[in-house]
Image 1 (cartoon, chains in turn blue, cyan):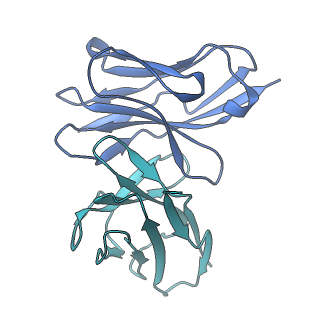
Image 2 (cartoon, rainbow over the protein chains, first blue to last red):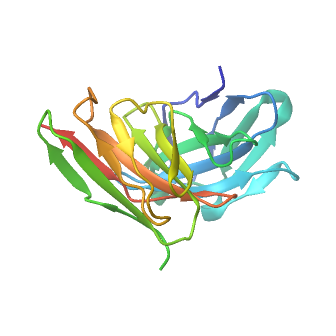
Length: 114
Length: 110
């Protein structure tokens, strides 16, 4: 079955430290890939997306993600975390022929400590 | 400002009652979606519509119904047939590049 896996349910990171969130997918072709962020009780905001081309994608709020076809991964990174980055992060996949129908991972909750 | 509005923000329902959640967008998007969010499960697709007067079931459509009479509006009805309706409901619309999400409605069944 096609799926999106975020292996880490919960990550705690110190302010100023680097952050990496993992995402793996199981689709036959290269899908469209997204990372969203959600603050408590709010909707989702798009951080970045990958459709094709350069496999290193820059997003908002200082985030970047790298697409690795050989590993079916699309990991999200930030070099230096700020307290405001505490939130839940979702990886999502859009099969290229489904036009916007997203499959989401279960999410990773990020806690930032002083 | 263009965006997606959902109302109400909080909704309480007694068991056995139907309830309708509102979703409106002024982004001129053809496609709209309803998701359900439960802790630890991410977002699951309930229904989606790619054009007015047409919609398709998502992964968890049982106990829900929708309509798409206008491009701007995609209301979701949670019926009494939905066994466990307490959840956070998110509406989204999309162009071909990105989905945009509303602020959500938290439904609690008493």
